[in-house]
Image 1 (tube, rainbow, N blue to C red):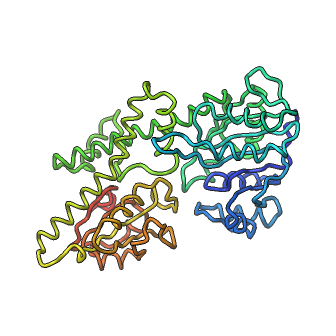
Image 2: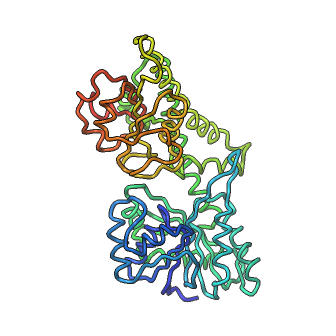
Image 3: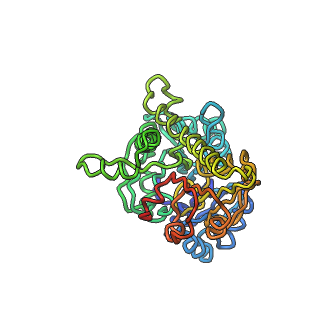
Amino acid sequence: MSSTFDTISMIGLGYIGLPTAAMFASRKKNVIGVDINQDAVDTINSGQTHIVEPDLDMIVAAAVNQGYLKASTTVQPADAFLIAVPTPFRGNHEPDVSYVEAAARSIAPVLKKGDLVILESTSPVGTTESLAKWLAEERPDLKIPLGPDDEADINLAYCPERVLPGKVIHELVSNDRIIGGITKACSERAIALYQTFVQGECIETNSRTAEMCKLTENSFRDVNIAFANELSVICGKLDIDVWELISLANRHPRVNVLRPGPGVGGHCIAVDPWFIVHSAPEQSKLIKAAREVNDYKPHWVLGKVKEEAEKYLAANPERKESDVTIACFGLAFKPDIDDLRESPALDIAAEIAKTHGSRVIVVEPNISALPASLDKGELRTPQDALARSQIVVMLVNHKPFLSLKESLFADKTIIDTCGYLSATGR
């Protein structure tokens, strides 16, 4: 089969799909982005972006204006199809690959001999093989590879993203990529496609190993974060400054304890380990325990908020609960992005707003409106929030927060879940 890809279709134009589509388009490939969100499609076709990511807006604007990138709500013929759709989980942490199946069945009618299909969505082991079966069901006239020795009219591979929000453009280009084809020929064609813009090494393996590799990377990080989060809970009980403790422990030449936080967020680390647990529940005890530790951390933070509110009321008996204003700083799952997916900060703020006796003030500089779960909150500037509140919950260390004057926090009770005081030297 030819390695020439004149037209590339990106199914899903979210935090990974749009940057990837933009990178192909920046290399003068004709790219058709497909998304069910009409607003996102219209925004992209106007040369703008619906997500916040450094440099992405400039690349998208140039690609659209030069005619290399367009968006649509319908699938159109192409030479390569990349699928980057959500893979959440249902109740009891059961993986939901229905979006992947829907994407597969949507592209099936326009497939032709010689096309390449790549799944990028983080997925349970075996999903790429399921993708092959769905395509085979829809297109019995084409040879779809179901095993490593099959002849094929269509090439199928799995290639997970491994980028950091806020640095997506740089890392899409520079990071190594794991390429797992159903067959060796599938891997080779996928590598040829990614080498359009990837400067890192494209490493060949099979689809199941590539799927497990992505899950392993995020589970490794989850386990290490769980250690830090559990340590912070222990230090809270023993009246020890966890930030000082970690700084001292990390002076050991072979120790690198991570920084604790209010939990673990984002679509990857908070979700992917459960895919392993679901596939091998008896063999993944440590991975499951780490998930439980990190899922517990927001509840611990809420307990601290309740405790400090009760202390304030005890010290000010003339006041009632509705007189206590709580300010939550940060909603995103990590600093300096607008991504609220699986964010423990958002969950904590929403729960405070739900259970507290008065409206809660929220400070999040990367969004213009609060999500529906915070309909009882108020989006304010840092200065306004500090002027009106008695209790301040630091949830995310956004850069604008680090430059706030120390005097603004005078007489405030600060619940520091993210090392804000340590980061500002206070």
